[in-house]
Image (tube, rainbow, N blue to C red; front, side):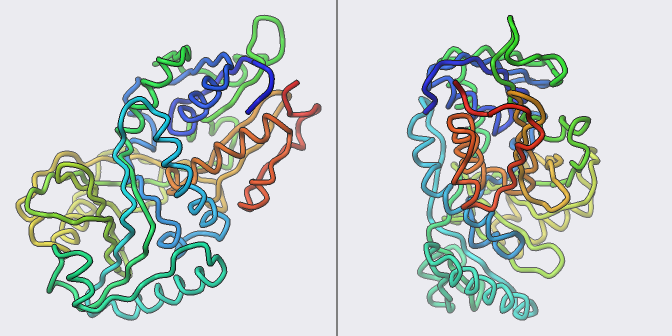
Length: 371
């Protein structure tokens, strides 16, 4: 990776902060991380997520560059996870899309979108249309429940909380100096001066709003349930014109159910309406959810820029900010990680161009690359 050892201060120990800390420490750099919360990731959007890696499914709501980042992640996540000491649940059984008869028109629109995306990006496996028999073969738990469906091969998911824990352990084992419950601002550092780190990487998400004023919070709500009677083998999405939901099966019959996306930075508990919509929609997919036990109803706000796309910018010499991962954090994090590492090594990133990723280095007064 980077030729000469340097020292880094990383602000924020969410998903991006932890990935960068581990990668840089492995390369022999001295790394210190400053996080406003504790090691559990309570303040991070990454903790309240389904961690689905679904570029074709997400093509219905995002730009082609994000889809290409998601395709990149399907290769990179197995590599990143293989290097961790602790196991992390990872599955690549594809995504199933189902709908009720009254929502067939919306499903037809989605199918057209999937076909258009595949034509533009043939490296993505093509969507497969399913009839009732095909549904029963692919997902026996839903046999007889839906007359039609769509299967998106190759898509995946992982366990977000296992990953955050594994990355925290890896940071400790790699000698990263982690300062939990220690909020810091970029103004607290003078990178490149005596007694200071050589580089500052700001990965604080919404914690960086004072510096990146265009950031806004988009609220998400998820329900975690334990459902021993449900045996879904892959993430399943229910088409609905108002609140399309996803059900992501984790280990030991734990399911993450989500859908809500509210333009608000409110971090109060989930509303009764949201909880009812999520749970009733899950029950509509599989009646076994009626006897599930609610483990948690969680809310968090995702850091989002005006165009709903991620961006990297250099605000001063030796200072990089990474933000705006929005609802696609786990799907695009490996791409952002690799772009940042390219920038640190060479001062430019061919990957950023391939992903249509906004990288703004103009405000800096010197070269970005390490000596």
